[in-house]
Image 1: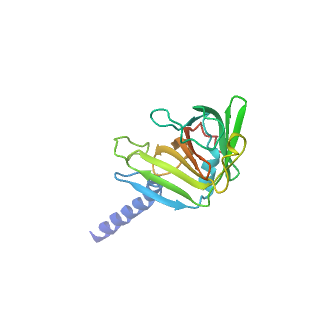
Image 2: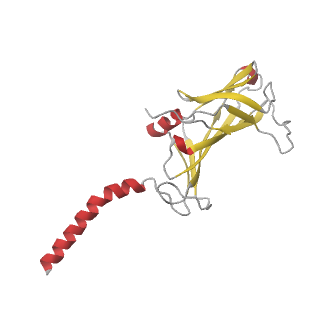
Image 3: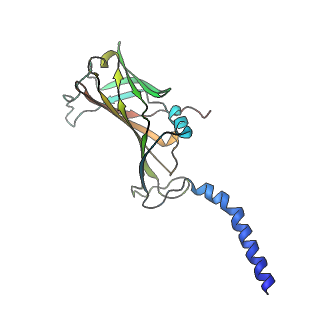
Length: 205
């Protein structure tokens, strides 16, 4: 009887050891009811790889109040509601090129040394692909901005930027999770914000 008990116990341990690696790997990205994660971290190689895959959508919208008031939008030459946009992470700088007809300008936003990552269960009943709640998530970037063209006159040191990438997903961050963005520029002469959609990410290397 004792021999059988030892044999069964050994088999159980072996089964656990064989199943644990796959289960642990599967749960590395699992989300749970009530999840809430927020914190700063230095972008690692994986995070940088995902950021470099991201592409901004083709349109940037100027943020306005409910009545269409853009009086708070100060610091650049044009106040159109929409702009053609070309933007991505170039080296370690977010480079966003805005164009309205024959007028254009570039905002250069250096990647900060630390990025804030946020994810939370917002209790809306949506489920992620791996099970568990579909988390609302953000990557937030802050630093000093500089600009050319239509932005040049209004961006004088120190002018700050606050860029948020918004998405939904499980506990792991992938470029495909993030669908929207919002950018605020504030300084002595500048005070404006844009928002829009993110484009399809560049393929994996």
